[in-house]
Amino acid sequence: MTEDEVLAEFRASHALLEGHFLLSSGRHSAYYLQCARVLMNPERAGQLARALVQKLPRELRMKVQKVVSPAMGGVIIGHEVGRALDVDAVFLERPTGTFELRRGFTIEPGERVLMVEDVVTTGLSSREAIAAVTAAGGEVIAATALVDRTAGEVDLGVPFHALVTINFPTYAEGDLPPELAALEAVKPGSRKA
Image (tube, rainbow, N blue to C red):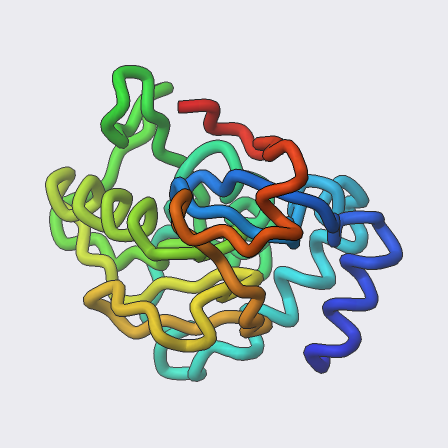
C-alpha cells in the first residue's frame, strides 16, 4: 500500500480527526489518528497489517518469534501482524503505570520479538515497552508501527519501520499557536493520565 492509500483508509473510516488534541505523549496537536477506528474493520486491519509486514526486510520477518504490543493502542494491529507473520502475539499492560506482561503471557529467554505499535509520536511508550520486553528476557530485534508521527526522527534503540510517516506538528503546552489555544483540548486516546 502507498502512503496515500493508507491515509485514504484512515479518512474512509473517519480515523483522521481535526481539532485540538492532547496526545498521550503530553504534546498537543491539531490532528489525531484514531487507529481504533481504522482497525475496527477486521478486513481493513488485516490488510494494513499485511502491508506493514511487507515493509519489513525479509531477513527480519524470518527472525521474529513473537509479536509484543503495548495496550491498548497496539493490541489489534499487533494481533494482526502476528497473524501475518504466523507467530504468537501478546501485549503489555500498565496496571500500575509500568508496562508488564499479564494474563499468563510469557517471553522465553532470548526470544526474538517484534514490537508493534499503532502510532509513534515521541517514542516514549515504545521505549518503555521495549525495556519491559528486555526485562522479561526477550530480545527486541525491531519495532514497527502503522504511523510514525516523528517524520522519521524517533530513536527507539532498535531498527524502526512504519507503514506511513507523517509530520503533523505537535506542540508543548506553552507553545500552542493561537488557533489551537482557542480550542478546548480533548484526549481521545486510551490513556487518560
